[in-house]
Length: 106
Image 1 (cartoon, rainbow, N blue to C red):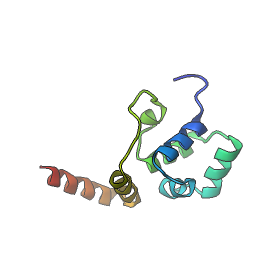
Image 2: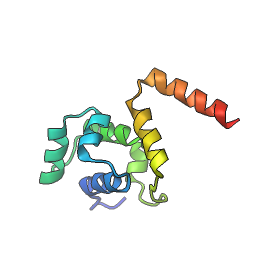
Image 3: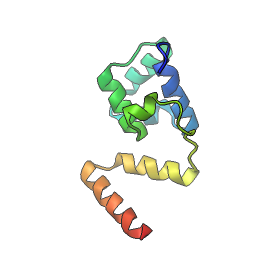
Image 4: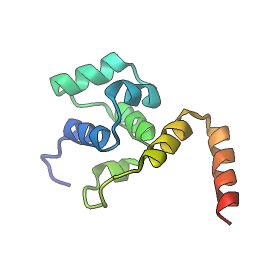
């Protein structure tokens, strides 16, 4: 990772590639929209806690956030919808959804 890594630019890039509005990301992340919007507009760096919530909202790990060498996050419309719905579920329901998907794939 470069010392010049731009966290806000990465957040914007991930939102753009996923066709995700800042409002939706804030909702998925559990942070106020005003906080996210102000941070991105003014270039303020998020705290580690806020960045973790953003990564959770995006459905990626912190490692994936900072790893620019991975393949682009080009998702189909159906994949985006599944990820968005999955992120709205409680952790218990996410576990059930994963079990269901694993069962379907066998």
